[in-house]
Length: 274
Image (cartoon, rainbow, N blue to C red):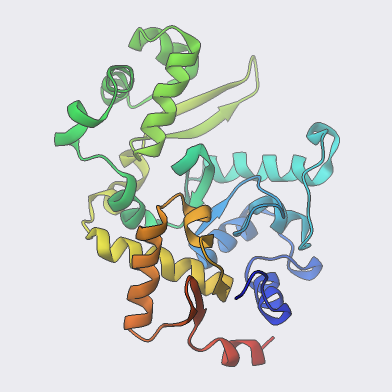
């Protein structure tokens, strides 16, 4: 049974996830190209968590570990600056999504993430908390607002409750941070997701298609996945992650090596190009 990945698969991931010095990410444009290539990407995770990561790509090495003092670390500082720039540019989706992880999503996958985690307007009263609905109501009237002003206007004044409401709205793909200001004080500018990604969020896809395409995006970058890996990276349940992988096997895109282990059908061909 596979417990670790073969070295050739790790080498494939090095290339796909920019874990090599010559492929390291140094600019916002390079970061956007990474997100487009992998489909979705964590922001500040390191080698201890599987999946593509902007921080690891900035480091350009497989064994990157986040230091204790991130303020004085040039790689984590650059990652933070690039995150801010990508947020401002708005060419890739950025928010705190499943399991409250800050994640970048390529526009082509936004409809699929919305199918899996989004909340339809007709279901908001049933699925969103009262605090989240209060914040959303203000943003639908104002379209964008700084954190402190939004907290006051929504009357969700307790900081912890307001933070939970914003996290809930981000997870359901309703709200995104679209700007961050550091002067005269640190604050985010919040906006409706549909303001930047109206076309993507209006596109309807089935849950089955969404599971398949999220699994496809991950396997393309990973080359091969171990049991539970897709679920851990995406926040999907293991049964739903399995459905996505099974669909890829059914169409011949992937091969089931053993229980929970999936491999790109043409991985050997891809490895020859490394």
